[in-house]
Image (cartoon, rainbow, N blue to C red; front, side, top):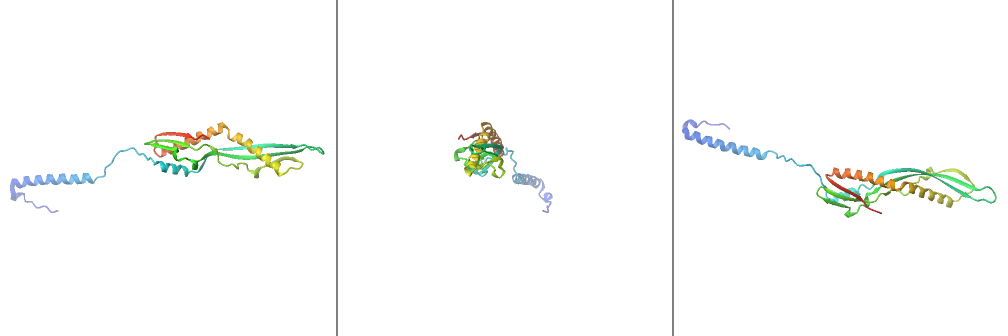
Length: 203
């Protein structure tokens, strides 16, 4: 804007008026700039997800395997044969047991949120796949005589029972729970929770 010098015409009174008006305009412009500037607030970055969303997200995990146990079992059978020598069968079974949690079993009341605190009760640790014996790897170590399907099935069931006793031991279940708790604690910390309590359902 082109300024006109009129101070010489109006004298001292005009000069005083110009000073007052100039000060007013300066304050007005400064106020506008200050209001237009972005306001920066220093706050702690925290993301707390609503309880229904937490339940949905955890259920969407599905089955989470925390411990894998490989085992092999040797099962023997003998049949008394009065005519010739006894019938004898030895078979070796191989199995892979996957221990973990099926998060789709998470209950509605399993999650309690209070501010940045959360209490989570997880479904029990379990065997994720019942068909853990790989029959394609089953080997017959020794066989004499004739054996029917019922005998093979009986031997399979014995091998499975022995593997279950080994794989689902108290030590293995406890170790799986510890692994699951560590992973879930890390996940919840990432959501912004500071105080975390993790429990497990009892069977």
